[in-house]
Length: 374
Image (cartoon, rainbow, N blue to C red; front, side, top):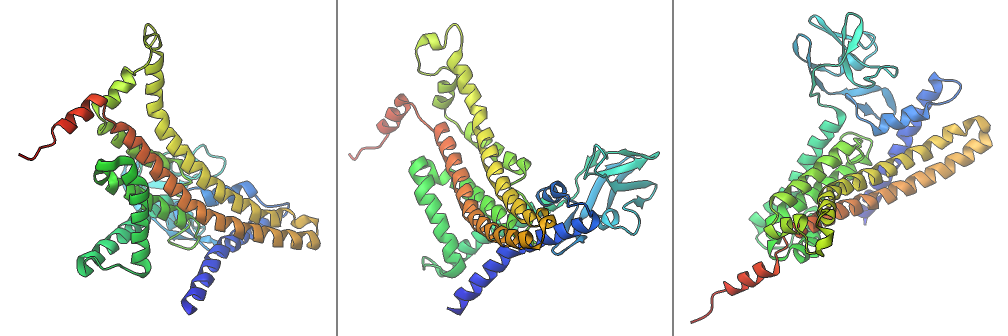
């Protein structure tokens, strides 16, 4: 019972911390600008990438990350604290080169730029370990730990059922494999299960980490369309790389009336277009749902400070309503994190299964090869 209460308490703290952190950031913004807060700036600061990891309740301090850029005179590697600090005006001299993070009025806003003859120039190559990149590394390590913990248990304990965290992870694995992958892919389930299960856990971990503002959480990974695009492209490559001849035949010469194929290839064009709309749908679906959830929580919290000018009564009432709705939306986001990981995995499984379809001729040949008892 104590463990249950402690778990609930930790969960509530984790859910309330984003609200408190956003409130702290808004107060800092309000202190700097007496006429109001920069709501847009605060929203994009929390949803965007960065060259450091924000410290909760103190947005003037950041956990430094390595900056790796190829400038005009070669490779430069230095800590992001050199260009995010205020001691040197945000400009760092590395040898003969000077670097800074571009301001709001710059076309390279938020990016590391090199100052050459007083002008801001974008480095030729920027492979810095930003907050999102570091968040991806953390998610990968957690994903590997989750899977290997189950493998390690069965290696030492045999078929004995695991408990606690390992048992929960195995339950999720069996739920996805027996409920989604195996019924859809049938005899080819084992071939694609490693990829599909990895995608599910990777997305789930990234979603949950995005709801926690304390390091190692806080990176809005699945709310970054570049991350979701890479995952969708992986599904696209696997679907088409391992596709059967029947799959390609149905794309370029589908089984439809001839006037839909000749003289104008109407159906082949539609089928080819559909090949590329599938990964596009995967990309936008995951990105939009997770980005929308984060944005709603931030906007609800900022309502407290937007209505602050209307008096203490309105501010107090708005604060109570905003905090309640923010916590409610965070709880919904936890559920959405599981749902979106499940939906992405399910759609990926369906797309791969479409590429594994065999024609009637091939299926009859496979049945004819079955050996018979003498």
